[in-house]
Image (cartoon, rainbow, N blue to C red; front, side):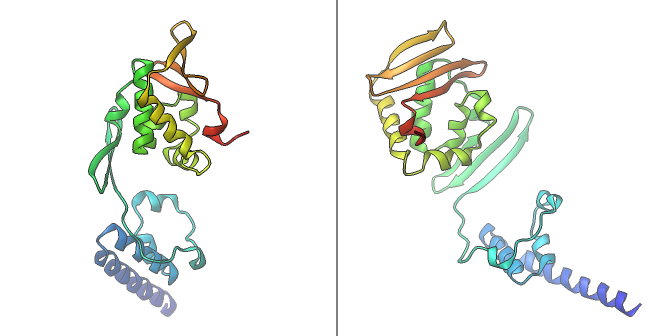
Length: 219
């Protein structure tokens, strides 16, 4: 009986401390640092209370203190999401204010190869990898995330090639050669670079860039 009462009292005290820690942390950076502090102290009750309902439902194991980040948390951007009948609507807030990342932009479609190329150049310049993801063919879109695209296309080995491609698209009109009747086209800028586009139900998509090596780093 005593040991059971002790467990109840200890559990109540931990929950009270967790409640205090949660209310004191108000900004995203403060909550992130409170989570790290709780995990470093092995206070898993507080760490659990700082998780969202979705995070709690996943029931993942808590990281060990040695695996935790060091330094102070700094908010880089803020994301807002809404569920709509047409799909999720995502806005991001950074130094330039709130901007659409996905949703309404995803409903727009490139009705011509030229529009698809212009959108590609805009996505490269703005480092908008959600928009770039929407330009991939459906089969490829299921294999990537925007974060994975960012990691692949911003690597030092290929980033300059993509920026040069965007400048090429903005600077001069390509020569178009149809590969299939109305479904695939090759846009070339001399003998240096070409983009192959394919038409799908939701508009024109970027199928390939030639030669591949400068843009993928693959041999």
